[in-house]
Length: 566
Ligand code: ADP
Ligand code: MG
Image (tube, rainbow, N blue to C red; front, side, top):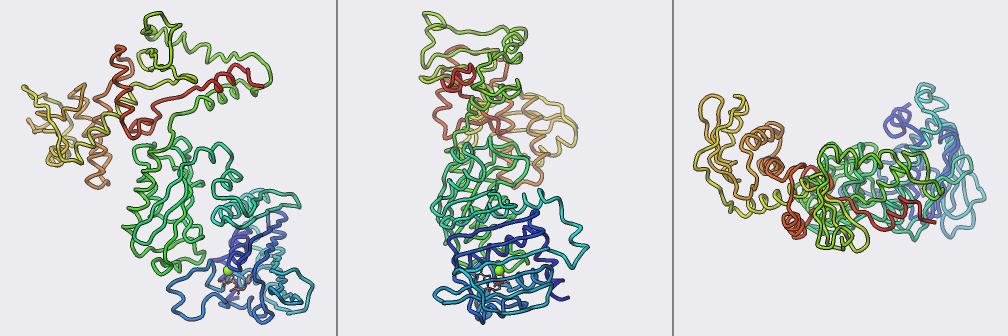
C-alpha cells in the first residue's frame, strides 16, 4: 500500500516510467539506451542500457522502497550529482505493474533477474543477459483500475513518452538513444551527435540551422546552449528547455530570465524557443524539492537570473531576425494547395491582387534613380504604398517596414540616453495641453520624477489636463496628445513592472508614437538616412513590439516562388 501511494506521486503515466528508467540508465553510465513501447507504453515499457549493471546484492534490494545506491550518508543530500537519489522509482513502479529487471554487472560471467508483480517480489534467479540492465514494465496500473482508466489513447501516451525521451536525449550528448513503438523506430540519435544535431533530429532542420549559440560563465555557473530567433516563438513553452547538470527542469526563475532576455524582441504572450544547459556545483542548488525532481531551488537566485538574462540577450541580438522570404513563399504556395516543384503556374490571387489593392489605397511611390527603375542596382531604394522600403541586395532584395525600423532606432537611442543619464530635452515655448482621464492624470503625476529622468516634463494643469513642457529631443515627430496618452497607457499596463522596466516600456511607446508612420511619404535621402542609422544599431531587425522590421527575398526564394527550382 505504502508503495502504491508513493507511486501516485512518481508514476502518473507511461511517460513517467520512461523518465525514471532512462534516468537510472544514465546514472549507471550507459552510452546507449533503447526504449521499446507497446500501446503507448501502457502495455510495455522496456528500457535497455549498456551501463554498469547491478550486483546480485543490489538487484535483490533495488525494488525495496528507499533503496538507493546513490547516497551513502545524509551529507550526500547536500550535493546530489546523480539524476536519482530518492530510491522510490523502482519500488513505486513495481507496486503498480508487472516489472522484471535483468542485469549483468560489467565483467561478471552471469546475469540475474528479479520480478516485482504489483509488490510481490521473486528472485533473484540466474539468467542469461548482456552486460548492462534491462527493465521491463508490463501492464501499468493492472492492479489500480482507477488509474488505468485515466490513461489516454496510445497515441497521446506515446507522444508524452517521446517528449520525455527527446528531452533526455537533448540533455545528454554522448549517449545514443533509440525509441521504438510497436516495433517501429520513432526517434533516434547517435552518441556522437551534439546538441544542435539533436535539435535537428527532434524539431527539424530549419530551427536547428537558425539557432544562435551562447556561452557564459559567472559566479560558478556555466551556461551554454542555443536560442532561436524570435520568429520561432510559440504559444506554448514546449520548446523551451533548461537542463541543470543533465536534469530537465521546469523552473520559474529560468523561464523569467529567458523572457527578460527576449524583452523588446517578442510579442509578450509568445514563448521563445531556447535550449540552455546549466552546469553548477551541486552544493549550490537543492534538487530535493519535488518527488518528480523537476523543480529545484537555487541558492543564489539573483546572480543566476542576471547571468542567464544577460547571456540570452546578447545571443538574441546576434540572431538573424529578418523573416526569410522563403517562409512567405512556402506559405503562399501551401495556401494555393500545391507544393513547389510540381510545375504548376504560380498564380496566387492574393499575390496578384496585392499591388492593385495597394494602388487603390495610396499610389505607388517610386523614387527612381537616374536611368529609371531598370537600373535599381544593389543599394537602390523604392518606397511602396508609403509604408515599405524596398532595397535591392546583391542576391535579391529586402522589404523594410519604415515605421518598425524607425521605432527601433528611436527607442535604442532613448534607452542609451537614459542609461547614460544624459537626456537632451526639447523645451516647448508654449506648453502643449493634453486632456486625460483623472486616473491617467494621477498616474502620470505620481511618476513625474521618474519621467523627468527620461526627459519628459509634465505638470498638472487643472483636474483633467496636463501640460507637456519638455520632451526628449530625440523624438523627431512630436504628436503631444498621442505621446502623453501612450505614456499613460504604459504606466497603467506596467503597474507590476519594476522601475527600470516601467521606464523602458514608456520609452517604447514614446518611440512608437514619435516615429515615421505607415503612410508617411519619405524622400530618397530620408530612406537612406533611416537605413544608415539602422545599420549602426546592435539589432535593427525587430521593432520594439517584436514585429520584424524586414523581410528578405533571396534569388532562391524567387526561384521557389516561380517554381523554377528543380
Ligand atoms: P534511485 O534512482 O533514486 O536510486 P530507483 O528506485 O530508481 O532509485 O533505483 C534504485 C536503485 O536501483 C538505484 O539506486 C540503482 O542502484 C539501481 N538501478 C536501477 N536501475 C539501474 C540501472 N539501469 N543500472 C544499474 N543500476 C540500476
Ligand atoms: Mg532512479
